[in-house]
Amino acid sequence: MSAKKSLSPAEHVELLASRGLAIQDPADCESFLRAHNYYRFSGYARYFQRAPHYGDNQFKQGTSFDAIRNVYTGDAELRTVLAGALADAELVLRTHFTRVIADSYSPYGRYLQDDFYTEVGQGERTIDACMRDIERSKDRHIRRFLDNGDPLPVWSAVEAWSFGTLSKAIERADGGAVADAVASSMGVAKAGFAYRVRALVYLRNRCAHHSRLWNHSVLDAGPTPNNVRVKAKRVAGQFEPRSVLDVVASLDDIVTRAYGAVAAPAVLPMLVAQHGAGSLVMKGLAAPISPRDSNNHS
Image (cartoon, rainbow, N blue to C red; front, top):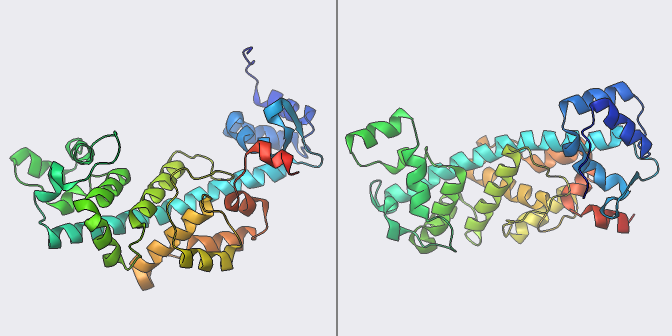
């Protein structure tokens, strides 16, 4: 495979136009590409091309730069909104995990013992993840315990844990009993709860790294309860189990139940109000497909 030549933003505009993309304002397009990596933009553009997987990069007739940019921008705005909702979820999970550990076990010691966790697969042990996050913390509320050799209370430890570490601890602590207790404490269904939390971590990581959500199939999808899906589909229409909308519906349910009357507005209704259930943005979030599939069904 031959190496590709590096192109300037102006040359990329010419390339897009030569492939049939309607560009009403070339200067505006060039300005956009100066701020946004062309390769990143092309990840969205592929869904509007005839057969990029076969080397046919011509755009489908009538495709405009503005249409692709609208999808790109809508995806970015969704990541921003989700960042706040996912932060709310992470904080309330920390709170209820702490409460369960402190009340049912001990605020000291037990939660930092290796045999408290049931390991899954060959990855990093849960206790190693917990201790790694704690030991690298520079926060005074952590260091004052560690530097003095005093036992670290769980309410301090969780503030040092990443969302991923917290998710592992919830899922694996005391053979799943902690996950059930945290779910009950939050007023959320126990069934599949730990896997729903894992899906939130997956979504949070994609948002944190500014990764595409549109037409993305969630690899670490959780079992969103049927009643939650039914309620969400009344708002957003049909969506697939591995779609981003399925995780958003699960997120809305967890946050709303945990925070009650002080919960922030749910994400899914806001998304529908902004874009419309049948829009290109919503279709790509509800039923993710590959560029190959999009061309087979065009």
